[in-house]
Amino acid sequence: MSSAITVKLTDNPKMKPTDEGKLGFGRVFTDHMFVCEWNKGEGWHDAKIVPFADLSIHPASTVLHYGAEIFEGLKAYRWADGSVKLFRPTENVRRMNRSAERMGLPQIPEELFLEALLKLVGIDADWVPHGEGTSLYIRPFMIGDDEHLGVHGVSHARFYIILSPSGSYYKGGLAPVRIMIEDHDVRAVRGGTGEAKCGGNYGASVRAGEKAEEKGFDQVLWLDGVEQKYIEEVGSMNIMFKIDGKVVTPALTGAILPGITRKSIIEFLKSKGAAVEERRISVDELAKALEDGKLEEAWGCGTAAVVSPVGVLKYKDKEYVISGGRIGETTQMLYDELTGLQWGKKPDPFGWVVNVK
Ligand SMILES: *Cc1c(COP(=O)(O)O)cnc(C)c1O
Image (cartoon, rainbow, N blue to C red; front, side, top):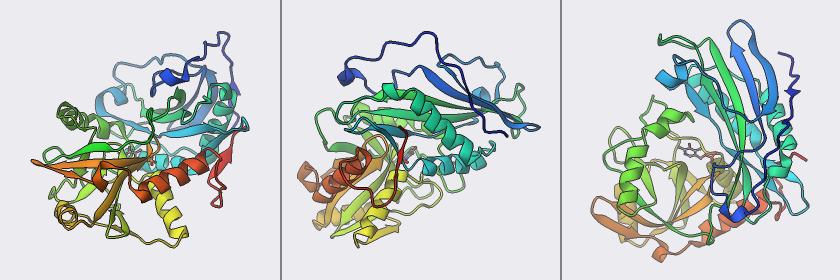
């Protein structure tokens, strides 16, 4: 397709939120969105930036019945000099295409996706908040949109990008969370859709999350879907442990979402000469390491939280306290390093930061 993205600016710009402390997550949206359509004959066409608005959708649309939906999540960061940056956006573009492949949705050209991201964030750059820890959350998503009820690969799809100014994940500063190891529901199985960022994975995870919340936990830690013995990931984050001085994280088996934060931490630690083991980790190994005093730290990692220290792990009727319920040294260091890169407070030897404007 020709990569010309047309732009129609809004005639009615909205009021920007004045109190950045009240933004929360994903509730406020900017003035514009990116829209593009695909069909089998023409490929991607009609790429445009238009005023943010409701969608019109056929009641038989594939997405409504068979979950033909994939998404991405990244952020735009406002630096102290006023500029706006993205963090490794090409990684999101590539992951979205891997998700598309798994879900029978069309591939989107990398250049078109990147151009759309930069152009849209550029147009709504005034919406990138200024406060400490705040950012503009970027949500690209694709839906299958055939207007009939047969189950099959789609011949129509739509791709969107919407933007949402979001508050700091940590209102009272970095704080340890309480995690419940889920021993009934599973999130994903090998050969399933665990490594695709698709809406269906989240739909199926809500029940366990609610159950954990009722019991006073922040998130669920998922075990493998076959033996329910091995650690996979936590909520919408990957998980890492420091055991006996070494950072270990579950290997990407096909059931785990390959996080860009996970990848960045592994690359960062390796660049410092620190070993990172990607392998299977059983609950039994964790319990034993805890009893032997060798489980030094645990943290979740993902775009939203960056790094989230785990203070308590509950499995069946046992509650284990990690790092004395405090933030571990490596956890804090990784948080400082990654947020330092993202907000331009530390140099970027990796070339991970991309300038928007
Ligand atoms: C998005 C996501 C992650 C984290 O990925 P990042 O690229 O680091 O944000 C982890 N687990 C699940 C299930 C996810 O959807």
